[in-house]
Image (cartoon, rainbow, N blue to C red; front, side):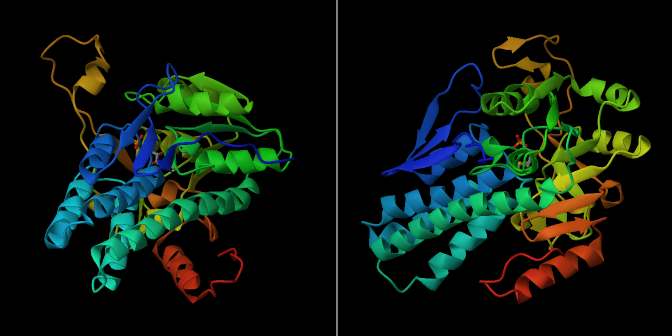
Length: 362
Ligand code: MRU
């Protein structure tokens, strides 16, 4: 079977980065246009674009757009580009892909700093396009690896949206589902709605429905009951950052689902590209957890249903300890029961691998 074409999350059109406005889906398909680093950072902060890999690709384009904008002024090029890195780095704290992409763009800049601004800008654009293309390729590769984990007929619970909309294409958790479907397996997805931003109800439901992959929506509080009833065979989620010991930061509510899955003996899989692994962070306790505005909890958009002035907590992510993760699926292969030793072995194997070599199961 031919692999389904996923929705487009972001695209470059001349001097403009166009982002599918994920705040408006599924009610409206609208595009937000960014031309500089500051408006790109604002789009990330407001969650026009969201999902760790998509944020990374967007930030890379933000640097490239700003470099192009600054290229006519040799005096302001360096300070302007520094400001661009700073504003993008401050847009959201948890997804390490943002910082990974910015580091990569900075290395390109450093490597080309003797060149004229226009030439540096050109190299930064080529680098951003490479980050974009590599994300799609990584998702397709991890999807193929992970598809082996989902047997024919599997009913798979996912949380948040780790699909095409959260990446440059194909998706991570939903990339695994897509690849399993493309391999001819009948897979159905149970999408947790994912309060408060409703990535499951609005985004996962929308993109799977658009491709004809069977999807059933539940509220977050229904997953334990469905597991107890024997209606869920596996859980698969994405990640915003994987610590060196395998602890996983992902959308708030993921930890709860992982505990439930362990209680019910259901495998809990995490699908993420290598760019999501942060070897500089020893364990999950060191991962910064974003706290977002109370208005996202007291209501949605203009509709506010909680009493005015109510005290609110809004951590947007949580940490799932590595010992609850059955396997981590990456483009370099599957790591069963990820821990510090297994992740170190994976990263070392990737470093040793010849560029032309095919990904090995690690
Ligand atoms: O706040 P969001 O919507 O950016 O959070 C997204 C998630 O938590 C995803 O699961 C994660 O980024 C992986 S996306 C492939």
